[in-house]
Image: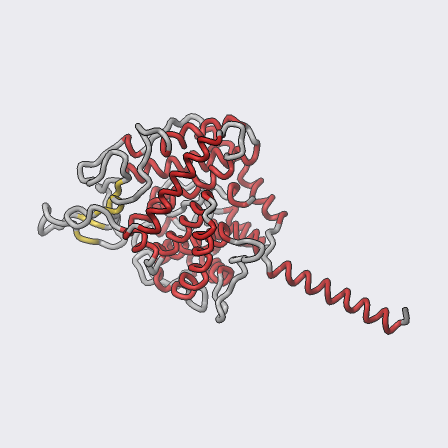
Length: 398
């Protein structure tokens, strides 16, 4: 081989290596080192939370009822947060005060579902770390109560969520309440191959989620929520993706990928990465965080080697990285926020937002991970917990 041929050969090898390296970066391969750091940062918290979860007994929707619900004891019921009695007509239909939560509304079912989510999330995280069957056994106790036991199960529908006294017995907007079942579904994926979970249990739980998916995609309320143009539309895709992955519904998984690319990004994200539909509301900061978390989880749930949503961009460059890069400076230093303060809960945000840890691992951004590490990982304010459905990154990181 002469020098010219050798030079060309080495040049080809170099270019091939550069292309391979570029392809790897473009594919958004997770950074294993940052993923390990995130896991280790959570280890003690996970084991502490799991110890708490092991002491909890099941509480489902049948444990509390409201005389204002039009459903049965097995139907989830909630009321619109921002609706209040009319001072001019106290016995009449409620009136809206956007952004201001009415503390007298019925929230017991929502609280029970959040508690359920926290229990399964903690137990699944501990199982992922230790593979100790005690966590699977206790999780199954709760899962059976919610999905399999005829005496205590919740019906796989949401006909009576976000009701408004004197106006609606339920609304499509109420579909957002079941984002709390996402970590339950992910927990089942973690547990399904354990020694504790029998085939009948797994099949029964998946059947419940399959029925709920049918309701989400065919009932008018579910379709209304799918068409919502702000974080509600995002959260519909997010939870449908999580439930479809559990049930193996490839048709819905494909539909959700397409909707993220062709509807959510183009209509909700501005070219600079902000969310104008959220920033114009009365809680622009909290809603922006919430929507970015939801879009990030869509990427986390739906990305495949052949179709990586983390690296997908619209023709003008809108994508999840741009969204994180836009909002990150205002998470690192909230005083820089260019929009009005939220009318409620301004002081309670941000917390350890999921988009920080998943974005850090995908895009190899140590600053994002460090910011995530120093923020609050166990918020106690109910409004924050409600708008932070992903509280256990370990079960999603693998």
